[in-house]
Image (cartoon, rainbow, N blue to C red; front, side, top):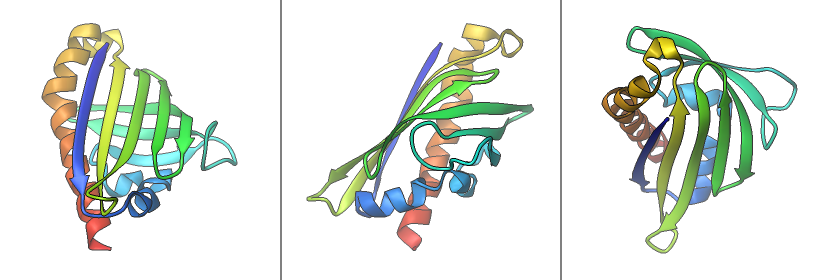
Length: 148
């Protein structure tokens, strides 16, 4: 299991940041490792929403199966990974500077399959590959939020 946590401050209110984060299908606009997102049912928002995310990290490609487990508009979006990579993830939005800015934090606890070196792969992949990719993703999110 690998625990990864990254965060960034964004010059926008939590409501504005949520407007960009809330449409799950648009996460590919700011997540470098997310290639495509496909919902598996009619629901596209809120707790219980299920989707597939085509993910590419270096030479590794996989379909990440996820379900939204926590949904508090403007505050939290949590997911459970139930595909080849399992675990949980959570976006947290916290107002800072009297609500004029937002602290956006992304935390994941993941378990990788044996062919991705299992626990060792999760630790190395988390800190060496995913941490830098997710920090880049957060810079992309900040640019997207602050430019509109």
